[in-house]
Image (cartoon, rainbow, N blue to C red; front, side, top):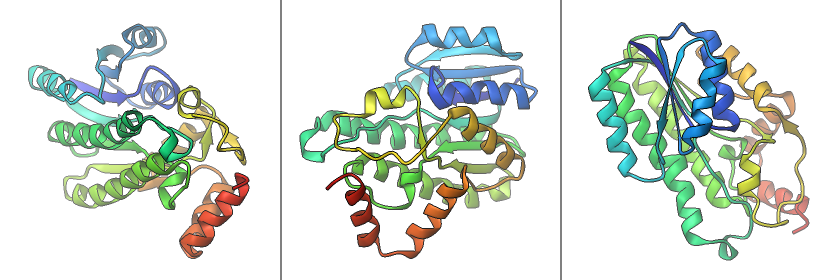
Amino acid sequence: MKIAVITGASSGMGKEFVFAIDKEFELDEIWVIARREDKLKELGEKCRAKVRPVALDLSDRESFAAYKGLLEKENPEIHVLVNAAGCGLFGTFTEMDMDRQLDIIDLNDRALTAMCHMSIPYMPEGSHIINLASNSSWQPVPYINVYGASKAYVMSFSRALGVELKAQKIHVMAVAPGWIKTEFFDHAVHDDTIKYYDRYYTAEQVIERAMKDLKKNKAVSILGFPVRMQVRAVKLLPVSLVMKTWCRQQGK
């Protein structure tokens, strides 16, 4: 059974990846993972492949055993794994709830790592892993510090894993978008600390670029000339200057 596995599939980037993967690949099933089963069931109406809702809270470690058990039972061939589940919190570190900030690490990093580790044994040659990083992967970002650090982990992990899996002919790509206006913002914005959002892209735009880059087996997918120039700049400039510029943009 040829399948794709997509986390965070109930909304935002994960949801749009479901449609893009369904269009691009010939699959028997797409396993869609998120907490909201009702939202997952709706996806089946718009896909060619059979959609299997897998209602799991990946911030809870007990969910890993459930996913591993499903793999052992079904023994599928995973041709695409998309780790799009994630959360963030924008504001002053000391003024935000500690548990919510720890949830960011659990979902963005721990769950993503676990999904890769459990899925890779079921992935044949020519398969793909897509991990959702961020433009904040490239530099420390005050007032988005935990989220940015979690995405820096995703970027570093994805690049290194891609090298390790090259011999198995499994391609790993990190997607590093700029600001995307999705449901994510409804939960991430704690207060008005972050005031400057230079430009928004849509999930559809980011994923269209990502699917083109996937065909080219790129290690990183970045949409937009301004974002690419920003990435080059932060690699060259002193970190202190980059952070000072960011803080000035936020009126700090």
